[in-house]
Image (cartoon, rainbow, N blue to C red):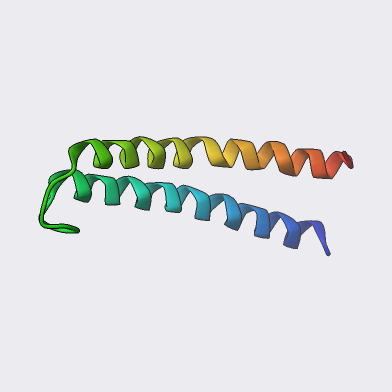
Length: 75
């Protein structure tokens, strides 16, 4: 596989993890608000999902970069 193709795939994976984290955070906001996803509001569950989603969006690409760098070094 060419380096350019490899990096395009890696970039796509990193962007999908960011988008996934943002989707989780948005679902958390909807759960906390109530009436959209469920009839009742669950603010603690929604806040938990928001925090998890934000951490996923911010930290997953860094973790993936570290993994990709280790793969490139042959570890």
